[in-house]
Length: 285
Image (cartoon, rainbow, N blue to C red; front, side):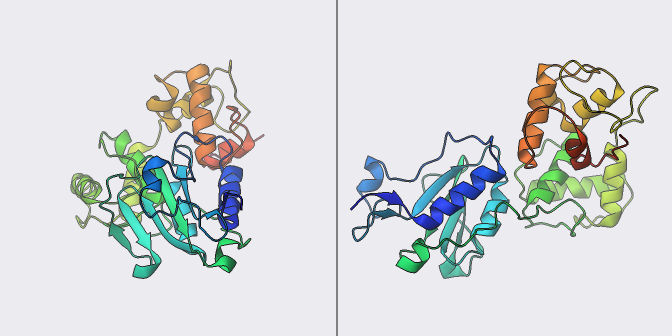
């Protein structure tokens, strides 16, 4: 009897690797260590067939909440843990606080059923084709989670909010939205609907490009220079691309690769048609 990862989790792992080929694998794992072997754990091999029915996936370089959403919709899934939250089949997959010693903030954990037909399932988890929520797709409020919340937090941080970009619309995000609404003379309700979003986009819009290359008018890469490069650096932000400027340097390459990986694009560090389009820029060449 050979020890092996449950086939349905092999399918999940392959789909995650396909969607985010340059993701970090540091916190990946599946078979239990000595600590796991002293207790009951899905990371330990089953006695009947040697299958391991749990996997840990590093969250750096992927959209963890997209993975959570797809996992809890799959019939083989029993529970998912991520960032001190657990979604369990026994609770109808409603989010609940996870109080275990490991917060699961570096990786997410997926456990699947020990029923043979479910652990051996080859059914797709839908990771490669799942659509991310984009900011503006829905009204955001306290309790919302997803990639659109991360977009909101990213924009808020351009205005000095200092929020954790974790995709969770909690009390700090709510408080910032209320402060922003008050400053913009909007209804102060903590909801991000069309009016609040329009004001936020206006407040964070980059300045119009000076005469020169317009964003989307060419492919830019290491060594390029111009206003379109400055746009790229502002769009991705100083944390990833370094200080503002018009030169496409190594920091810019690294920032572009990070952005492409997060958006499921080939992370080649080159801003071509697909990357421009993902940034919402009209491509003119």
